Length: 365
Image (tube, rainbow, N blue to C red; front, side, top):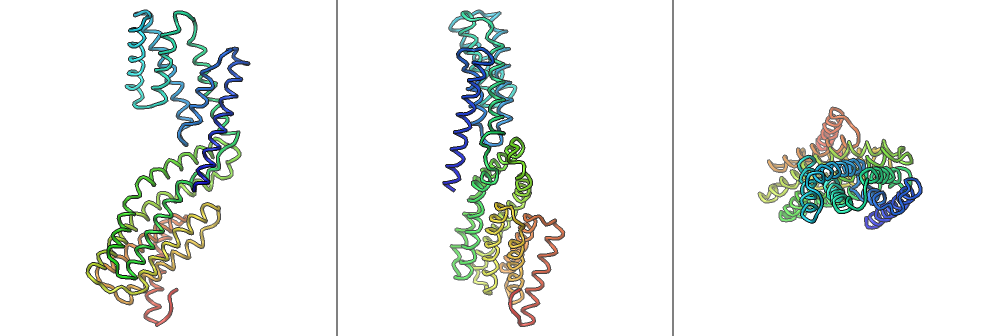
């Protein structure tokens, strides 16, 4: 994960350097500005924006520049120039931007910076407005082109960097629940539940990474071949959150079954552990762009073991664990690409096979 983070940091640094150099060169050689400050500034602002926000950031830059120019031109004709006029104009430009666009850092920063520039330099240098707009446009466009054509990020590495902690935590805590059921350690199940409840920040980062990966496969021709993989991951993400929610239910019901000393057939912790294996397989198969058949087999095995546990005999909360595991398994199958009807049917069939194997005195399967 640290290597992935380093790779992303290096790529963004290279992109920012290239964008700044290209924007400066265009500003000087094409636009004729001997000191083109605004073009490289806008280019770097676009590059360093959060992944998934770069096109939006470029639009905000341009809107901020335009609003700063409009506000400053209007107020300068009424108030003139001076120290208090500068402060008043800048404040009005930022206020107008906040009222129109909300707390958008890019738009507010550009509106304020443009107002400062025009309010302080307008008396000594005329006609700054048009070069400011042109350079900001050039810089933003150069930034987007560098992102799209030069050193584009690998979208699946972006996703795996922020999805890996989620898969690791989910699989790890399911294994903790499995171990708690095996050893009768109720507090271990409670700790696993607390860890599953604390996954909100990781999920937020994964959504941001997904937005960034979708941006890359939309802008960069070199990454268009990964578009289907990113779309598949996006569909799986919605189901993964449901798997996490139902895994919390598995942990909660397991803790209650242990608290009331209910019988725990060995197949029940084995089924929970098998579900953890399926979660890890899903991550690996998505990252490699492979079919998800191994994940599906692991899910069916987990459900089959849960069915055996039910047939061997569980009480109220143990039965609830089986139900929650089956629901999580159905959502995990949907994360592999199954539709809801097929996923539910596979889960029912696997659970029935497990129950039938107990009645027939057979082995799990």
